[in-house]
Amino acid sequence: MKRTACLTFSCMLIFSVTALHAAAEHELADILELRQEAERAYKERDAEYAQLLFKQLVEQFPDDPEAWFGLSRAYEWSGDLDEAIAAAERVQELGYFSASYLSHRLAQLFALDGQPEAALRWLARALKEGYEDRPLIQSDEAFVSLLQDPEFVRLAAILPPNIKDRTAGLRFDIDYLVEEAQRMHAGLDRPAFSSHFVQESQALQKAIPELSDAEVLTGMMRLLAILSDGHTGIYGASPDTPLNINREILPLKFYVFDEGVYIVDGIGPAAELAGRRVLQFGDLSAEETLRSMSEFRGLDNPMTWKWMGPQFYLGRMLMLQQVGVTTSTESVALTLQDAAGQVSVRKIDSGNFEIRRKLRPSPAAKGEVPMYLRNIGIEYWMESFPDQHAIYFQFNQVRDGEDQSIAEFALQLAERLDKESATSLIVDVRHNNGGNNSLVRPLIRTLVAFESASPGNKIYIITGRNTFSAAQNFINRIEQWTDAIFVGEPSSSSPNFVGEETNLLLPYSRVRGSISTRYWQDSNPGDDRAWITPVVPVKPTAAAYFSGEDTAMDAILRIITADLDQ
Image (cartoon, rainbow, N blue to C red):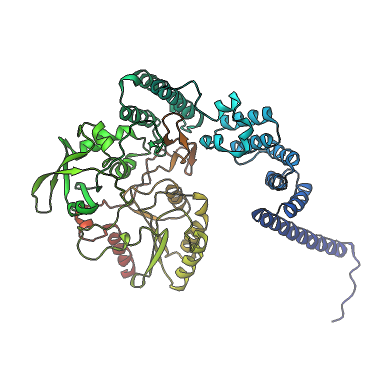
């Protein structure tokens, strides 16, 4: 059929619209390419090329703070501080994802540019906005020119030269601790401003001349525990502390099972005590000892202490002494019960031991090591269950591995799920105490895509007391975006929780810790749950652990098998 020319207005309009769409698509492609090339130049710190590209971006998009930030850094790398400052101030006008970080950076730029008043003004602003790395300010090379400035000394929390004795130094530290708690802590009810917190800090200050160094340290711990979250706490003193702080621990690893407190491992000769139940520490029951120590640590929920207590506190001689279990820091008497029911008292000497974190296979366990305890040190790995059309994925830390990123692993998991025609995915986060939650999106996409691919596909999530922080963020999003079935113990963070690991260093005592700076609201604003409750609750028992059983995994496999048999 012969075609005729299109001369009507409607036909010409169609041609015009089509041409405009084509031009727009070409322009969008060019913009994307420009952004990607600018990001590449930024990552490679190619200052001259990055300047050229980011200039083009801010000309086209003058209200894009990310482009202005990239331009500011590119100017800084080339030594053009005035332009770097101007671009950073434009970012500040537009708004940036971290106001305190940007203010701190402006303080650095002004200091490097020889403008001390502006530098101090922006540094003060950064602290007011909650800047989290205050201890690093005094060693920052950008601020070398300000080290003798009294205002900088105050902002950087440098110990004033007139403070020379212990009482004055520790009182300065407590004032600083209160200041940092009130400046940074993100608790919605602002507990750092409560009369309880303020009065306890004042009482601790007043009592300092009569307190031992250990009592001052535990007093600080008790003070921060009032802030009531699992990321806020005192860790201990730095090696350069002027305080006499005992650092010795018992050569034993403890764990709380449903039956009670047990020794699961030991260092050197103490390894032969693995498998024994601890009835008493000194004259206190094991349970009462743990309860007494809990006043020294803030918690997200009761599971936080069930994890942290035995792992970080129960074996510390300083803590055992403070709760009255022993008057010595050299040894403690434990009342133990063996598998046959025989009770004995053993004197355990302390030392400079290092106990590995997370539950691991015990020398007292019988039979083959269960799968959930085999690869605790690997960030993520998987295993197939062909008979159940299932894949088991253990996620132990929210961080990229040395040889494979989480994003790369997520692709590998997706390919394997498809290749093996799996209908069940078991995700085990029992050993995952967090990391960087910005890395989990590729995994979440894989899980959502798997469940959406077929009505019969199911996801099972095994949680436990060690599921904390970024691992909680991960399971929050899985709960929201899938119909995953939760199995095991509750997690040790809440769906909405106050968190973030930060850098706290007290100027005189050199005591280290953390104050939570962010309210992670991954769930509904009104969600006050302490945890995500497992639909299939499974408590860890000593009987199962020492016999090499995984009762949580067994429960899931029974459910899957029953579904396949229907």
